[in-house]
Length: 264
Image 1 (cartoon, rainbow, N blue to C red):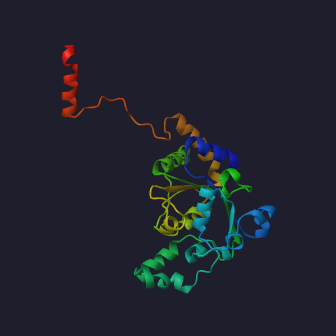
Image 2: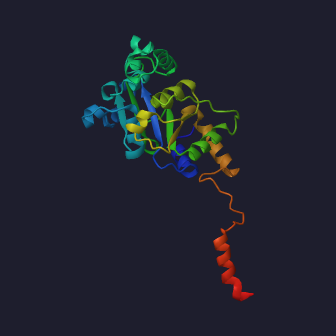
Image 3: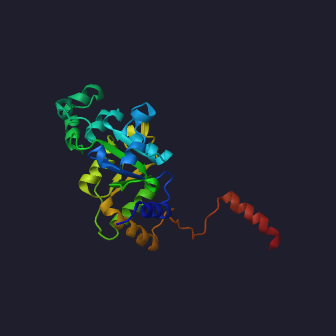
């Protein structure tokens, strides 16, 4: 199975992301994690004196190169807390009334959104470890890569090179930590992700960015697909076709005629 170093090197060569790829490992019990790393990783509440969102943790890992441990007490986002299993999904979440009050959306629509949101069971995990892939001192359960649509396209092509078919992802414009982490692990498949509003506001996802995720089980397949598609001519930066003769505007044509006039 591909190591974190091999994944990092392949992504750097074939995809060239502008921020670090991120390794993620949910910990059922903090005691299950590498003891020194659990102590050394930045726990936002303990080490930074602040609470954050899960998408901010991913953002800090990919932009700052930090290793973070996000626990229940570190998380400030209620929806992210439900998705990560840090908070219980109570009645007003399920029936839609909790968010219909302030969003103005129909209660039934919010209830359907809640029902379709992928989440870990309450209490299933005590913490989420995130780190830049090249520096991860743990074996990630999944890898997250942010990039532009062309970079994500290349990763989709790679994921499908040998198995064919299509990747099936979901998007709601909200709660992308659920899509990035929970959906990827529960489906045990690669995903292409539309960053949510919160990821843009708090996680600093940029307007041009999308994300791609792959569980550990699909890493070898994606890396082999990257190499094969690259050899077949599907590359990033995407090669552009320039074997054509451009037409100049009339004024330029007239100028060229003038420059060549004395040569006739």
